[in-house]
Image (cartoon, helix red, strand yellow):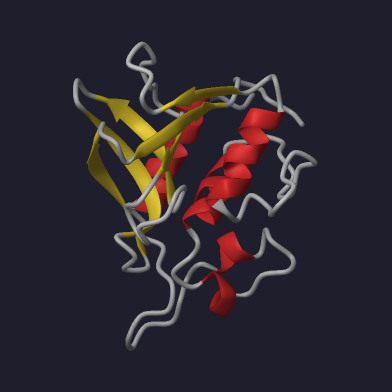
Length: 172
């Protein structure tokens, strides 16, 4: 049984591992993430694997989602834009704009960001671990574009583009 609560627990553990891409004097350890995307390699993923981390955690939590669902017209779930297309295109998945003050994020929700890494729309993604009044605790890959995963605090502000809520036991 795959649940968002289990997804949050797995994401926390995996982020604290931590995963990292190519670092000075350290070999990358993101092969388990990269291997889920057949057309990708570590060099291509380097500094661009936040969405791959989210997908990896979803798979590890037991969610049945192909890396490139039909709803992902422009890319696969290795990209933040692919997650947005997938969520909007599959009516079983909830998609909530970040500006929706009535939506309360829960552990296991996926959060899409604008302008936190590259100053672009949907340039980053993470998994909500906990909701606070004006902040969320999240697990993310490739945080701050430093090529490392971690658990951190993000403010609920204009950088949150949307939340994606995959139903428990979701199967594509």
